[in-house]
Length: 492
Image (cartoon, rainbow, N blue to C red; front, top):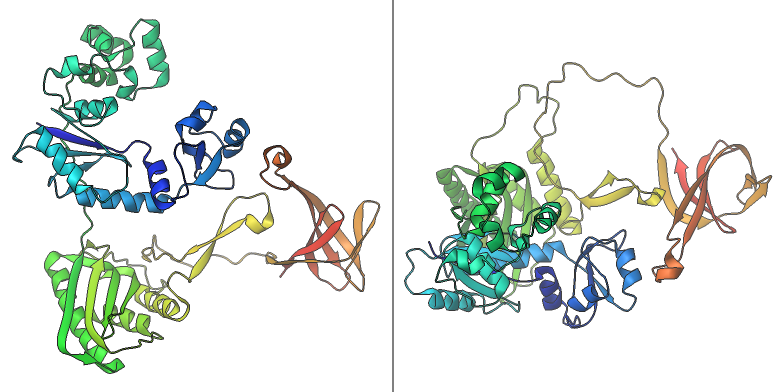
């Protein structure tokens, strides 16, 4: 069964260069996943020659390659570009398997032409992407992938075993320790592995070794697994006239929602997100995204969500067309619970969030999440309020007991300089005018970036924090950095 392999070597680096024209892949470049405590996800060949390896910490990589430039990978952009590549490959074959970022397989059985024509069709489909492609063809997935390792445009049209025989063991993606054991036995290529007797080899290295032995002989019977596709219900409404008032737009929108719900019902699906596009007379287009708290196909709920999202939207010209798409479709069933009386109404929550998006902008409704961190100001993270299912996870037969005593909550404040008088190494008077410290707890030491001067990564941080109770009853968190004191939080 003919398989075409598409491989984009160093995919993340290629995407970084395509999205940032200032990046030159001929120069030493380190691609890291993040700034704080980042790790290397890829690097250029010139950086690798200096000792940089994927998996290193960013500090280690910058220490061995002082002059290398550092760029940061955007996983969201990577996923978007790869999804666009897979969509484009549909033009060459209806069966496309996603082999992970940068690698895809296309089944060409039943498609007219020869390997050269198939490769040309794939390259034509991806002509709009500024990415380095290797496109090869083989009788199965493994051989096609091995051909891509050898170079671009290579076709295996002979004996697969002879084709892969000179290639290294690393193509089998087996553990490095096993590769080292095989090398000690004098086995360094796939051909040498294929020459080993099948039974003794499998008994010595386990059940997985049977697949390795087959691959080394050019045998790969695994069928391609078509990638899952995101379903989308899309309807549009255009008329001869135009909508110049809010009531006219809402009337047309109600009709459009009814059509979309009819399509959802026919497909047995529920909408998890709505995308409304408004086309105006002056050729301007406005796209509004509305999240659904709990996927639904109830017309009244979807219409109320869209109406709430439209609150505060001002258009410069009359509306001449509407387009409504339902995305993130879920199965038609609705999870019910016998003990959901105390749960929040997901539809009500969704409408509130839609109004917040309309008032403050999409994605501005945030919630805090507790995370681990050495500094108190980094022990939480703000993230977009995502709407998980609000169904009850279990019965609540009775409310939980109230705690015997209330717990004080530390409320972080913007750091501001304060006056502190120290006696016997501990803060004794705080503020201006000074207040006597009745009780003190601490210090708690935070020390970061002690390596900063050596790597040029930043100024070292050495901070001591104290909780102090003042004579007016206030309980506050203060911190000292060098000779400077600051107020960091207040206990409520």
